[in-house]
Image 1 (cartoon, one colour):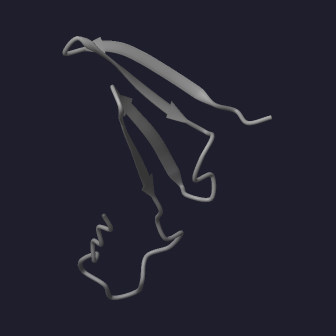
Image 2 (image 1 turned 90 degrees about the vertical axis):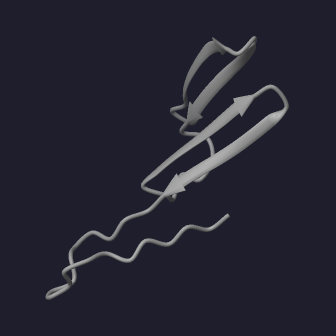
Length: 63
């Protein structure tokens, strides 16, 4: 149903798994990282066009 992609490696004696395509599909990009019992979701969105006259971009981080 979903076009998921998963990659796993051994890192620090534990399995690191990166998965995309299952959650946060409305975002422009999203990856779920799992290491041991810890799971982190990283999602990114971006505007489709640049605002006229803007010479910087505001960066917002939610955690």
